Image (cartoon, rainbow, N blue to C red; front, side, top):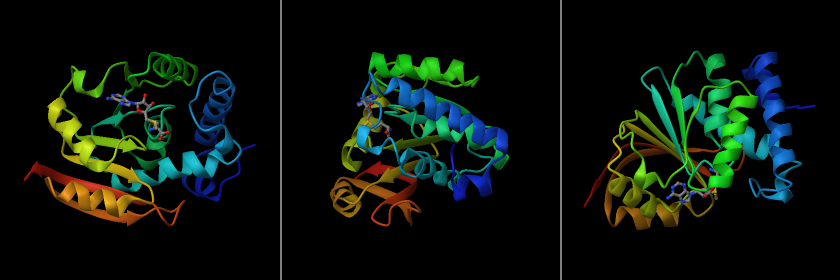
Length: 205
Ligand SMILES: C[S@@+](CC[C@H](N)C(=O)[O-])C[C@H]1O[C@@H](n2cnc3c(N)ncnc32)[C@H](O)[C@@H]1O
């Protein structure tokens, strides 16, 4: 059974049930696919689901369409979509994942969980839809590479939320050599070394 102070305080029983259903489906699928590292399965609730859910506080009603880039197992996109109702949000959720096997998992999870997420199995640079209010991404690419990819993809956005690990400062300094970045960053509640970057604008120097 899922036990999490964070979810106990922030979501309904029904939502918690859906997170548990996602968890069971993910762990079963992880036997054949590398969706999350096997060593993190036992601590998946805190390490993955709470970690992803925490970024919902940087979203509001102006975030109408969200694209999760390099979604893998659906992190953070699926978790955000499951919990949005409990936060009075109603965005549409899109996931882009270039691996056909992982995309297949995402499609099955979407229907198993009765969600209405749009899944795009392609390289993000090949996305046909080019307009989103919000981009989110976790453990995808270093910041400089991420901004280069977004530039090449010609995707338009109003906000980016990037979940960054312990090398966040090195990545930020490197990216700032090439890009003007209008952002703030916040402590992660699950890992003191990690940060959540909320980016309102990026342009090439
Ligand atoms: C390290 S995983 C992170 C997955 C997930 N976001 C998480 O936090 O667990 C990065 C994912 O990005 C996908 N990916 C890499 N390059 C991509 C691209 N250009 N377009 C779309 N997906 C890509 C990979 O297939 C992989 O599933």
